[in-house]
Length: 443
Image (cartoon, rainbow, N blue to C red; front, side):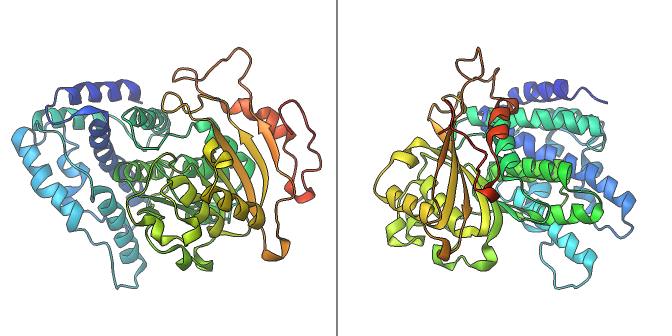
């Protein structure tokens, strides 16, 4: 077992010496594509032992084991030229990503090719020194992603990398603390065969949590695992979070995560064109708020719903994309609860079409140090027209700070255990939450 955290620190120290890498966002982007290729190669090595007919989507000379694994291998200008002139052009444009073949092996190979193509479509080699690149590669090669201990440790470090990305600053986008994603998935409780969507999936926190939840509770055999893999769906418009999310899914045992799409849910088609086939059982998401979409995106929506506020557009889409009796939990700022105009119309629609049964009000600082905006989690279930208005009563639960805590920060983040009281109080939607009682926190 390797010292994973020490290796990551060494890599970051090496990268800081390279004149081409400017700031956290570029360093993380560089780290991720390099780690992706090593993780992918380790996974391929494992699959090759299990499947006789496995076909790699990568030409032999582009596989990590061929050009990177030998610590005494190509370095200096030769390595830089190989990456910039051979590796990147091939991964961006030359992989087989579609096939007319009906053979299962060919179809799987094309799917794998598509995953790699999507990762590298907007990736970039920022490092200028081939000698420093070789040093980074040799450090990465020390981690064995088929070793469960290494993989687990890297998973925790990966979580820290995702947090670090936020301090690089992104418009309206915030890393959702693991405590919040765990609580939401725990309460929504996606069943094994239920389709789960995060339409603004970022780095994949909700989806990773959903995979863990289903595995722990419902997966009993390989057939169940196949059902689980097919049930996860995410869409992310920005290249770096998409790359991070895809890698996150592979770390969570989804070897070919073609269902993590690099796209914008708000602009990919008109609101009216989303139909029954697009609907899902469960939506869990923390859409970017405070950010604004590019010009014209709001024109994909009916006139009464048009706004430049990203979170509101996502909320309209979430309501539309839920199946009958589908469940959702969405993180939204106070502005949604108390805003007027289009927000009022959207809330009317929400209360009419869905049973908005619970709003958990989170304390200030959950998203520190990225934003001090006060946030809420809205839990609701889609109902039929015959059941309108679907919402009869909304419960509010004010989540308090734990004893002795006055605010959250990087070193003292929110913990899942803090939600234990809510979980006990929660009750069952099937009986109208009749076990719930009002308290100082709940009304």
